[in-house]
Length: 186
Image (cartoon, rainbow, N blue to C red; front, side, top):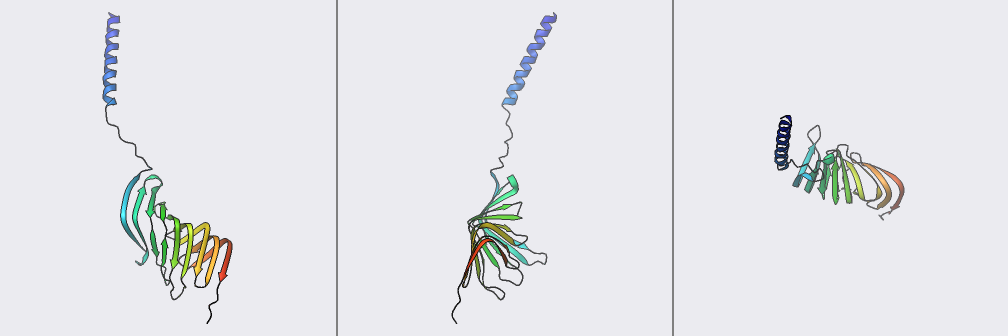
């Protein structure tokens, strides 16, 4: 009799396990998020940032920005950034693409990077060209370790690497700097 009860309990346990297994096998599972896929896409974006006094600090435009949850990274197509320093003409920054890292604390600009400031009361037209540049929007500061060409009327300077404070216009050349200066006849 004990053998019969044990056999019946074993059979009921096996049947219960098979029923449980079949039901859980067919339950829909929650998809695992793929952090390498975008979690949002914005098109025709214009973002304006203001300083503490309510003055425009910068504008950022891009035809498309794709955000990725992994590393809180945003990819910009052909970003166009305009910085508005006090008492200076604005700086225009363009690139083929860009990646904002750590939210918007650091932007890596990649491919045909051009930083341009038009002539103004306290400056001459200046154009910086390089292949890659790191831009810190909150500090209005940029740097690169790549070859750079800087042109101003009558001047061409080449360097490997530079830093630039876009508030003051102060440029530090990092290495292998060479210049060409042309005196215009009067």
